[in-house]
Image (cartoon, rainbow, N blue to C red):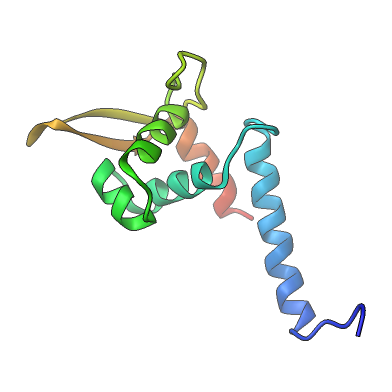
Length: 118
């Protein structure tokens, strides 16, 4: 039947409205070139704190190249040399020089705080 809704509308509407507000908050960064995996990587870093690329790959089931491009985009400069979102910082892992750690920077913490307040 057209227009029929089989789930609990009030619960779903609240969750969808929260999701919509969260996506609108991200859209303030870039309303045309923000991919879902970029949001997923940001949220994983916000949740886990400092972590390695490998941790992100395993947690999100994304390839190393996808994580690498996304981390660059979330940082200060993307892979093409254009300005990134400047939400995270990366630095070499002191325990393993070939590995990098990522963490939210001040701007990323503010965005995470805004999302938490939704």
